[in-house]
Amino acid sequence: MRNRFGKELDKLAKEYTASVSFDKRLYRHDIAGSIAHARMLWKQGIIPEKDAELIIMGLISIREEIEHGKFQFKEELEDIHMNIEARLIEKIGDAGAMLHTARSRNDQVALDMRMFTREAISETIAKLKSLQEALLTLAEANKDVSMPGYTHVQRAQPTLLAHHLLAYFEMFQRDIERFQQCYQRTDVMPLGSGAMAGVSYPVDRSAVAKELGFSEVSANSMDAVSDRDFVIEYMAAASMAMMHISRLAEEIVLWSSAEFDFIEIDDAYATGSSIMPQKKNPDVAELARGKTGRVYGHLMAMLTTMKGLPLSYNRDLQEDKEGLFDTVDTLNLTLEVFAAMIASLHINKERTRKATEENYTLATDVADYLVKKGVPFREAHGIVGKLVRYAIECKKTLAELDITEYKRFSQKFDKDVKSITVESALAARNIPGGTAPEKVQKALGAAREKLNGK
Ligand code: ARG
Image (cartoon, rainbow, N blue to C red; front, top):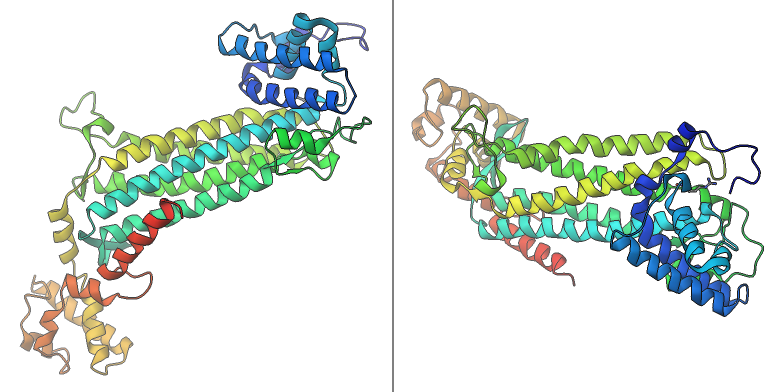
């Protein structure tokens, strides 16, 4: 291996450059890629059939060794690719030495990373759908529950809880679409690019792509060995998904506090305090919020790693792995536990109902009432502003004011102003995308259809 060099690699340098401790995670993809490559080399007459057979059998048994914990990974062999190749030669002799014909570790590792990322995307999409399922089921089971909608964390207008939950359904739907698009761009087969200029053998790249389930082969060898934008795209889509999860997490933290008291987290997803016996903490939500930072960090790290790299392959690219692996693990685990926690949430309906009625959340509807009687909206806004200030001063709700009090602020007020309720406010927002029960019912149906996949 060190034929060109006068001495062995320094021990510390060896440790510094080795990646097998983490890239061994790519063993399945590496072996599948090598099997497809060997078969193609044989079919193209580049290596003899008997050697290809030995290689394929050898690789399958190495996969078993790894899966049964019998494979000895050696740091001095640097990475997963050389570990497997060295073991193959050890097992089958000279035939093993033919595997690396018409291939470089540069296109090999690009292939492995693309295969790994494709799998990760499929898993992430499935888990995003499970989270959508949990949200949708919770919304369906509580479709009549009202709650105050907020802006600036101040009670704003009545909404349905289901409408609020469906907002997250939409966010996760866009996340799914981002991952689906990321899949398309990841689904490109780089083998045949060699070290960077393409290989000088009559390889059949399409056959390899077909065997490995890729939709296309890469169009430019230099791009194929040096580009990791599919990794960055996964990380970016993951960051966006974590951002959405984190927002929901924040609401769960708020809603489960005594101050809001809108929900109760199931005991299976809450923890206690080591000193305060009464505490029940929303740790799953807090950690999901917390782990978002680390996922963003991996994205920044990878963008920064790539930014100064001239074409084509540079060893810096080895830094793509740990960040990607941790991103995938963090996101997928977060999605799984989060979905389970959401599914077990208890909604405190009386409390959300009461909160919907408090704090003058119907003021907009009172202004709209005046608009319907011909008052320009800005003027109506001013009138109701004064009315609310008056009500606050007499410590009354709008419902508790009598009609003569209303009339002091505008002669347009009539008895029917008293028929403005949470229900009428909800029902009034009967436009596409609005919180009217009729529209939310439709939105629930549309979400269900989308999820159950037409
Ligand atoms: N471990 C390397 C990586 O992850 C594999 C490719 C090595 N190529 C090379 N020319 N040293 O990028």
